[in-house]
Length: 180
Image 1 (tube, rainbow, N blue to C red):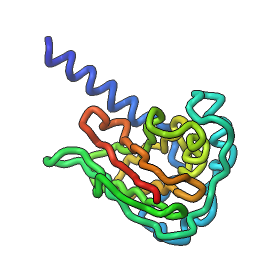
Image 2: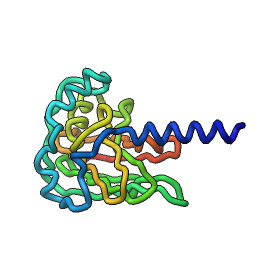
Image 3: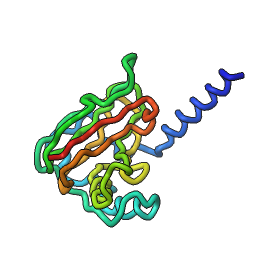
C-alpha cells in the first residue's frame, strides 16, 4: 500500500511539472549563444506586470533588457550523481547573460528564489527571463535535451541571486549567480 502511495505522489509531480502548456515559443540548441539574447523574446514585454498581478512576487514593472556582455552556458543535469546546475556557482557581470541548457533528467526550469531577491529587482529579473513563464521569476519547463532558456543580467544590481529548478528543489538543484 505504501508503494502505491509513493507511485501516486510521483505521478502527480510528473504531471504537474509537465503541464506547462504548449511550447510554441521553445528555444532549441540551434540558438546562438551571443546575438540570440539581444532582443526580447515574444511574450516578455509586460510579463512582469502580469506576474505581479497574478502572484504578487514581482513588484513594479520591468522591461526586458538585452544582453550587452558575455553569454555564459550552464548545463541542467539529472543523472546517477544527482540533479544539478553545472556550474553550481557562477559569477557574471551586469549586462551578461546565462544560457541554461537541458542536458538530462528533466523536466527542468529556471526560477529565482523570491525570498532571496531584493524587492526592487524582482520585476527586472522576471522581465529578463526570455520566453514564456509558468510563474513570476520562473521560466517555462524544459522537457527535452538541448532546449534552452536564456536570462539577461542587464539592469540587475550587484549581488548573489539564488536560482532553483522547481521540479528538483527537493533534490537540491540550486545555483548561486553572483552579479558584479
